[in-house]
Amino acid sequence: MSSARSSCSLAVLTFALAAFAAPAFAQPVAVSDGGELILASTNSPPNWNPVSATGDITTNRQQQWPLYPHPFLTGTDASVTMNSQFLVSAEVVSTEPMVVEYVIRDEAVWSDGTPITVKDFEYTQQVQDPRACADCTAAFTQGYSLVSSIKSNDSGKLVRITFEAPFAPWKTLFPFILPAHVAETYGDLATSFNVGLSENVPTVSGGPYMVESYEEGVVMNLVKNPAWYGNPAHLDTIRFRYIASVGEQITALENGEINAVYGGATLDTVEQVNQMFGNSVEIGPTLTYYHFSLKANGDVMGDAALRQAMTKALDIADMTNRTVGQYVEGAVPMTSAAYIPGQAELEDNTGATGVGTGDIEGALALLEGAGYTVVDGKLNGPGGNPLRDIEILTYSTDPIRVQLAELAQAQLAKIGITATIDAADRSRYTPEAQAGNFDIYTTATALDLGALSLAQWYQTDAARNYFGYSSAEVDSLVEQISVTLDEAETARLTNELDRALLADGVVVPLFPITNMAVYSDSYANIFVNPSKYGTTMNVEEWGLKAAN
Image 1 (tube, rainbow, N blue to C red):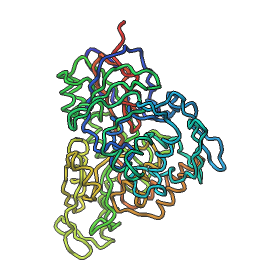
Image 2: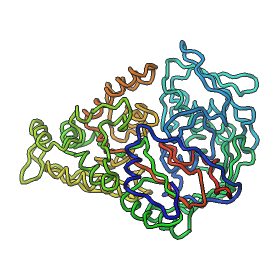
Image 3: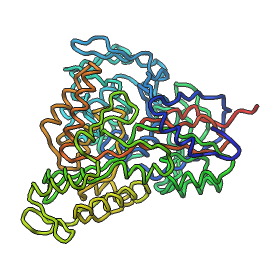
Image 4: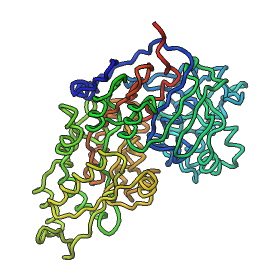
């Protein structure tokens, strides 16, 4: 919507969340060429490699999207389509064995003039395949490790990938194509991936924009890529200005210091926006949801009975009502860690497993059966000693994550557990998680990859398995899902995987994130994108409104 005074009303927010089952397709309008836009971001890139375990985070993906080629795009309606600016075609040409063929446009080149070819696909596959690079710290390896060969033609523009076994979500592969010729200058696969592409600001681009300059913690300036082969970009310059909190970002927008803000909607930010003039607001649902993940090893959390009691005592509906429910009427809590409300495959798996039901009596019964006792309101372990304090790690710059930690703290107290909260800033939050310095981790997961999004967290030795969790049943289900082409069978297996994780007491799904784009009325074509890659997916369409 657009108006002289932004009108971010509760009615609009209600519609945004309720409409997830059929989010709207946004049609771009005509804009003029030239000008700049300053977009706020909460943090500068912690790692310049967007497919590494450290670099694959929301703000980083969004900032680096304009710099890379992408075979597929997610629309504002959550549809996935081939990126015709980069590819001529992409299709499964054989099922036994499974073979996928991509044809790259002849015009597609990196900003230094080097053609984008099969070599770039080969490198991007190898660094995400543990068989080819065991030391590469990739965020995601599923699918890449099933590739048996990659072949081409003389031009290198044909990419023919043969898989050892079927891989149903093949369109999720290669979200960022990495520049092989640049990686080559950094050394072998592991060195180039973990060090070269991770620690150095990108010097070449395969997208509509490229980095002109970067000042850590202050700003990253992007300018048009003169070798861009797709639809012409409109803005001359895009600047990412680093401002730690969304509240501060909106104040900067109101003061005219920046032109746009993109992030999760909160009660405070909605109230701020309601007082502003001269801005447009786009609000929409996403495929990302908040959740708690629990450690599954160690002196306390290694006891499954304790975890199961904790997850039963936590109350998902109450947390939803006290957070997003304060500004989104009819906000819907999660009933699954694998599907968002509104998706056809969704089942009530939290109800089936008792997770997040706020069942204090049931939680206490589980604890009693495992030898725990509550004495003077304090939980004692099976040996009779008081249980140590449970530490909840949360992100200090996200007010919702902080509030969720506080609510969990209060709910766990009902079963005699004392919880302390570590509200870490951006410099500590991810490192503390990676080191396993928590008992409960307050975080979020994007379900763009379906069940394989869960594999990144909970499969044995997965890149984001900070929990010490391992389950032969879960590992087997992940492997079955990855090779199943039948949609109904995939949904059945995914719900089975979901119930296994919930029953093990390692995850408590909470509610989907609703994102909000607020920007000056002078601009157009800035949309909320439901994928984990964010609003910059259509960055070449952004621009100043054309004169009437």
